[in-house]
Length: 189
Image 1 (cartoon, helix red, strand yellow):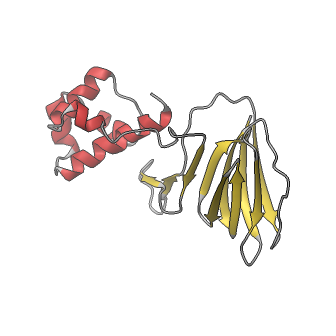
Image 2 (spheres, helix red, strand yellow; image 1 turned 60 degrees about the vertical axis):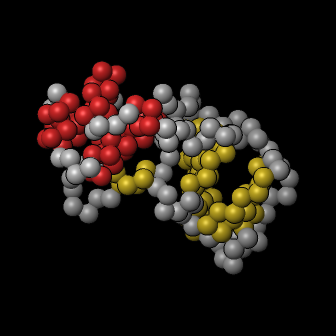
Image 3 (cartoon, one colour; image 1 turned 180 degrees about the horizontal axis):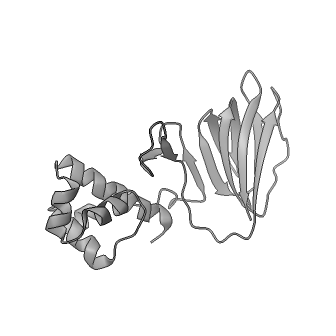
């Protein structure tokens, strides 16, 4: 199970529990585990063993098949993933006033090096030739509007959108906005 699916598991348990108005204590008691363990699972701080997971699902009065039906890897249909602004997953990592965590992307990749870059694109800037890199690329648009072409697909990205793809695919970008664009890029080699 990849990291994204593991994170979906905690979210799914929490969603089902709150939908059914079940408290942490009630679920823990019914599943035969501690309240703290349920909290850690829901907040993605630990991964339950299979017997514990099955007990939790059963304690939520859920069928195993239907519980897992809509859980899937969001990039299972190719090597490009776009997370639009607002699609980030809110999660609570710690109870600190004013801290709001938003999970943009989680992926398991075997990488040996990481490079984080800030790219500023002047109005009208364009790369005409298609290029490749030997890295997975994660682009987060901080400001502006860009067009990203990967092979034959064209994606329009606005401020707050994230693009994740295999840089070995031929790609190019251009600033199609009315002002400068700024992109935070992470290369995973």
